[in-house]
Length: 208
Image 1 (cartoon, rainbow, N blue to C red):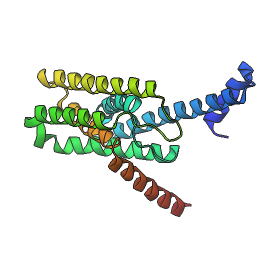
Image 2 (tube, one colour):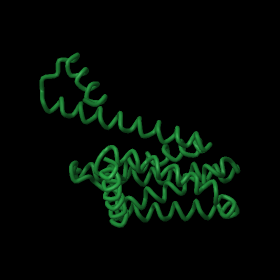
Image 3 (cartoon, rainbow, N blue to C red):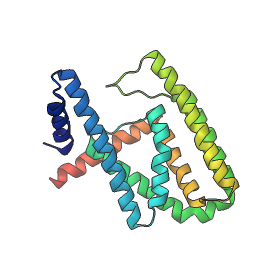
Image 4 (tube, rainbow, N blue to C red):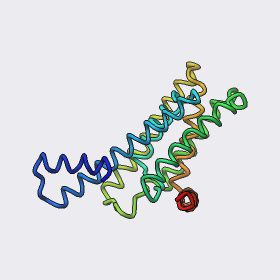
């Protein structure tokens, strides 16, 4: 039995929850919560080894706004999700570190293009719902508004950082992860996630 299952079972017994639907909801919530926490901790820890933890922290924070409002492509299981998160955030942070000298004179343009691209994708695609968890009309309407607000909020934060010439590398890294998050809202992004899942499945099966 996994740790999330043990935690959920402990809460079920301590609270005396008899309803099976409530038990399933609690178990699902525990799995999501512990999966999210472990993903953040492992991703930031690996980034710390390469001195990229500050950039990765802000990347995770920024992408959370889009992920929680607009949705996006999902991996098939929690292990794949963890591996993809650790790899994507660290590799994009490293790419930002190695290429910042190329774009540092054009950061304003990078931020504006990222913002316009985000607005376009949000307008066309958001919110992207999970097949296992369909959304009502009201939920879609609310999440769509929140998605636009999230894009504008991130643009303002990046714009202020650029104006005051603060955290240039972090600003660039956040732009890269936002481009990835926007891509995950598209059908092409879903195809990318599908092929990554297939690749990980083959690799993990061979490892066994």
